[in-house]
Image (tube, rainbow, N blue to C red; front, side, top):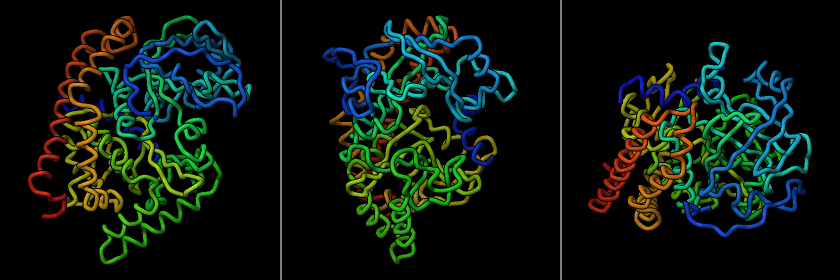
Length: 466
C-alpha cells in the first residue's frame, strides 16, 4: 500500500481533528423469527428501539426512498454543511413516513471534506433522517433517527458492520449496523450502512437504569480539559440525560489525584475499578478494539493543541454512578499494517516504554503515543492479564478466525448484487480486490493478537515489565 493510499484511508480521521483546531452480542447473519411491524406513530414510553430486530436484521438490505420536494432540496443544497434539517418524508417497505427531518450527515470527516472546493466532490453523501423532528411521537420501529453512512473510505464496504459486531461479540453495548439502499425521489443513491443512533432509546435498551443516566460524547475521564468540537464546557459533551457532569468531574478528579501517588499506574487502575461499571466488559472492549485495529478510536491521541481521543461515548449509570464505554464511528478498522503505526511511527497502545514526544501524522496534525494517557497506561501495565484473557476468549471461544472469514463471505454474498449495481460505489474490480485484501488483513490482525497471547503464555510478562 503506497503513502497516497494510506492518506486516503486516514482522510476521515484527519479532517475531524482539523476541525477541533477551528450496540447486542451474537446477532450475525443468523435466522430470526419474523414479527409484525410496529405502528409508525407511537409514544416514547411505549416502545424501545427496534426490539424485534426488524430494522437491524442483517439478512435484509432494505430500501429507503427519501422524498424531498424541489424547494426543500434547494434549502438543503444552499448550505449542505450546516447540518440543518429540511422537511421531507421517506417510504419504507411501502409505508409513507412524514413529515420528517432530512439532512446530510457528518462533521468534517464525512461531510465537509466533500465541499472543500465549494461544490460537492463526493459520489455519495451521508444522510440522517429524524422521524420526530416535526411529529414528536413519530417512530420507525421505535427509532427516532436513522444514520446512513456512505463508506467512501472502505472499498470492501463492510468494515463498519463487521467491527460493531465484534464489539457486540465481546459483550459491549455497541450499535447495531446493517446494509441499506438509499433512493432520493426514486433515484438510486447507492449502498449504505445503517448504524443505530446512540440516543435515549439506545441507552434505555442497553443499561439497567433504563437510560436515566448521563451520556457523554468524546470526553475522556482525567482529560476533561480537552472538550469535543463546538463544546465550550463539559456540559457540552452531554448528549442525553440530566445536564449534570458532577459524576464525570469526580471520576476525573480521582484519576488526577491517583496520578500524583507513589505508584500512579496502580492507583489509577484502582480508580478504574471503583468507577467502571463492569471492568470485564471494559477489557472486552479493549479486546475487540485491538483485534479490529480500530486505530481512530480511544487509542488515537491527537494534539490540537491539547491531546485527546475521539469516536466513543461514556454512559454514567443513574443507579450506580459507574461508567461504561461505547464505540462509535468504527469504519477505520481491520487495516493491516496499521497506517498510523506503519507510516507515522506511532507506538501501539501497549508500548509504554516508547517516547511521549508528539509526532506529526497526517494533515500536519501532531499526535502522541496512547500510553502517555494515564488511563491507557494503567490498562496496559496493570490490566494486561485481563486484556489477554479477554482476547483469548473473544478469539477462541466467541468468534474464531474461520467464523470471521465466514462472516465476510456471507456479507459478500448479501451485498454483491447491490455493490455491482451501485454507480456511486467502488465498482466491481476495486470491490473484489478490497474484499480479498480484507480477508488478508483479518488473518494478519488475528496473528498479531495471537502472538501477544503466546508471548504472555510463555513469559507471563506484561508490557513495561522490562
